[in-house]
Image 1 (tube, rainbow, N blue to C red):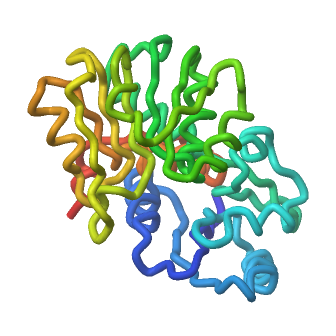
Image 2 (tube, rainbow, N blue to C red):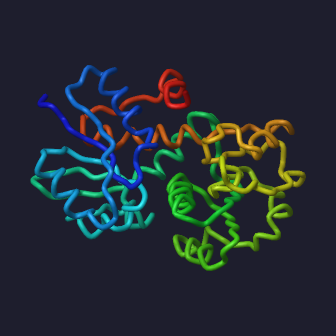
Image 3 (tube, rainbow, N blue to C red):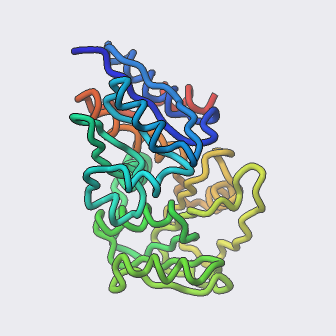
Length: 272
């Protein structure tokens, strides 16, 4: 196999954990390649991407602020990226970009690995309606969800999210969030509330069944206040780090032809 060059583009990009993840797998599988973080500003996207193509990159990940703008540079975008409304992974073939989105896959795989036997058929309550929530809701529907209830401080974003599948996705007012927890089998926080440097997520879990699984896609801190509160009352909790790790797997497979595993060694390395 020839030397494979990959990376992640964004602005800023120095904080990205992606090089740590992909270079771990490159080494583990004895592959010839490298994965770099490449800072490309919003005014320089086309020139920056053209340069990567010229330099022989096999593909790259896309993060903030390019996940929507990259659509215009792709020759083809798959159905998943279209539904989610964002591209986070690109394969370069014959100088052309082929876009997809692996966030929904990463989200579902994290739940399957860390809440074994999870049933997506019950009531699922989702906090937030931003880009991450869109990937989460799409992933849930693909996994067989029958009832997804979303709530968000901005009503318009919630309505937009319901259009993914109005028969399955319903909206409730943010102020009713505590009462709406009743009967939920799965609670997911997709907001930035509770993240380091952000306001706290104010929620009372009293109405949530003890059998419900609680997932926070925030991973800094790893154990958010939501997860700590849920764990203390006996709920099964799933942290957000697994979504980050699992979403990288199909991208790696596209470029290197190997679907890697997520193990505790990698998780510890990323969290260090």
